[in-house]
Image 1 (cartoon, helix red, strand yellow):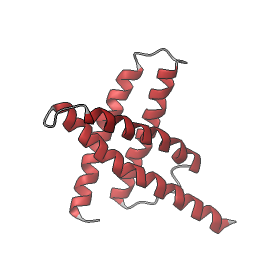
Image 2 (tube, one colour):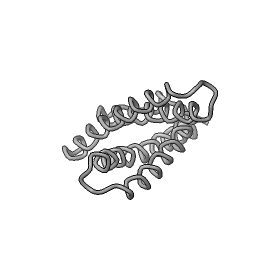
Image 3 (cartoon, rainbow, N blue to C red):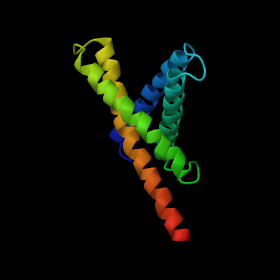
Length: 132
């Protein structure tokens, strides 16, 4: 892994940690069982999976034994949703504002995480096919 990729991934980890923190605070505002609570719960789970994948990528560890295919597939939709919502919100903000910068950093992190989810899922599929 080259240095710029390592730096990008380390920055992505910080952005994802911030997203997790904000999502956990938001989740506290909703009653369990509500759709908003469930949405936040699913986002938080997906962000933890994404964070773990980035950590493993930085350490060059195999992730196929850490997650199930189902874990990875369940994480894809919330990550895709966060990307879509962040892109839409960012378009409404002026460049240079802290919100625009935060969304830029979040998007960069999510764009790093998304292919890692797909890659890990493919690796699990390949490993499963080899054992059958």
